[in-house]
View 1: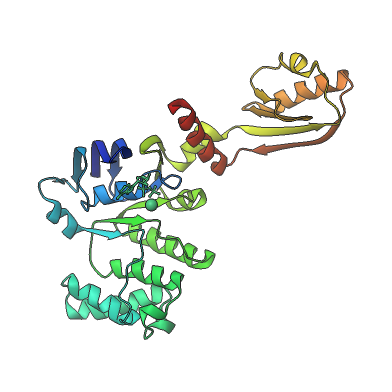
View 2: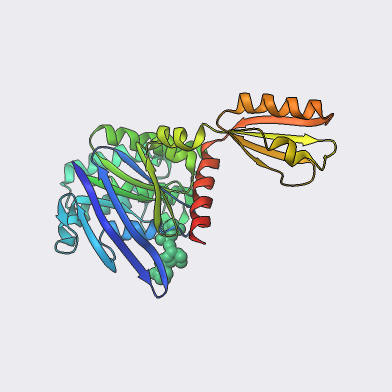
Length: 313
Ligand SMILES: Nc1ncnc2c1ncn2[C@@H]1O[C@H](COP(=O)(O)OP(=O)(O)O)[C@@H](O)[C@H]1O
Ligand SMILES: [Mg+2]
């Protein structure tokens, strides 16, 4: 079943198309990653999908419910953790959790149990009596995410939940989320950190300037964009004729970027490198330094984003 179906969703603010025609289908029972640079439209999309704001145009069905007709019904079935901090300064950590449970009409017994579970799952035990005002940014963020798990839900939206968390808290949260998905929850998760998306997501959409520019599994994204290797060669001196000499090498893209450096991108890096070396050798061009590295997901992400920027301009 698909729990999110968006068709041609637009949201504009004055002249800015924050969300610029998004089509999206999210299957139940998975973590769907929404990955993009700052200002890409991630938060606006989450606000649209959670019915906190209305689209300028487009169709939206969440958990089989029409978002325009029944936004409140949707809000009862989902959880949302927005990007901006939200907390009640004077309440203690445990009281915050407790109050959130009350708000959602969670029966007393279950409420008590959940508070204890979440204090432990989110490492908040030692600071349970502390006022939220006195917490660090990371602790507050943990509390903000934790309290959303006080109530039952089918679908959870998290807008950059790991910002402000240290690496260990980050990993713990991601593992906690993975467990919840195993138990049947669906998560829509935004981040600008690729490794995070790769670690937790079953499917990733890359968004840039309000438009989705790729949707795939992390593995397929790697295969589509990441079989490439980048070869960098630093020569001691450059021959005027170099461009000509190397133009006969096939299956690669060569940048004669700056001075005596050349960068080669290729899917067939072994063969290409061999040919390039032969040519350099037979022309007495001395190599000072050489490296060949697999293009990583971070580079894929930047590449996809850059290509979409170029094709827009
Ligand atoms: N309430 C608003 N009023 C005007 N512009 C907005 C508003 N919310 C977002 N934007 C603009 O929409 C674009 C997308 O923003 P946002 O969805 O917050 O991106 P992200 O979460 O990916 O960083 C940005 O250019 C931002 O300035
Ligand atoms: Mg945002």
